[in-house]
Length: 168
Image (cartoon, rainbow, N blue to C red; front, side, top):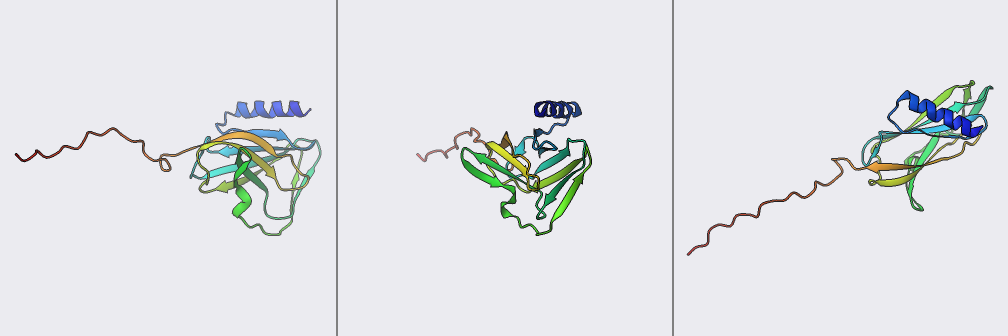
């Protein structure tokens, strides 16, 4: 059943023609988590958004409960070293809230970062929603590229300086 749902989600994402990568996984028997990083590819030192989509895949109403105003988190790691965590420098209010999902309903939870403080390279992205019921963490490979503003210009060949004529 989970494989069928994932295939359907991937087919729908492809049919929509969205240029952003969609990384999805069935997280419970009732809720599915998807993360859409933008831009594609992510750019070092530039604004980035990790939009978490939570969809009720069941035929019943589902309640997702949060203890704070934090809705999710994204981390980037390379090897065994975590180099970025969206929630690391943020403070969240202790305000319990709930999202009620009708069958088929999707909630979009954007996590915005400005600028993305990681160097260009390949990373493992881990995305999760912080509510209950617990959703499985999505893990996927992503690349971060450099921008013209963050990269040093490449050296250009130059002519050797002309020397003044020698006095005779």
